[in-house]
Length: 160
Image (cartoon, rainbow, N blue to C red; front, top):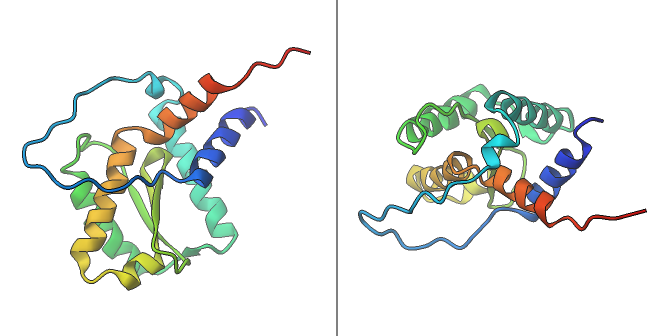
């Protein structure tokens, strides 16, 4: 496989999770743009290909809850939130995982998974929207690509 190193780094990143403790909201707080070369690792089209491939694989293994009503609900809410993000032109695909754990994750190409357990535990739609907003920020800030970039940078060269 041509992209084995990238795929391995991506898998490790996703397996390790991107969860960070939530910080209290602060009005008017704008984080500085510190820049990143992460966007140079993969074009947006390649990111979308990887995200689509991941979703297809999750479906093949039976991990995705394919329900048109749930898909419409998640995508309507998620796209409304995404339109107000730092990158409103970013395309998003939201889907439900057959998992009772309270969790969600975002990956390349704007693909965002929400575990069924999160929706079942949430007290209202606003709580789900808050998690979707958090995942949207992972996408718009290219956190997966930055993690892959860091993993590649931190690899120890092996000389044979």
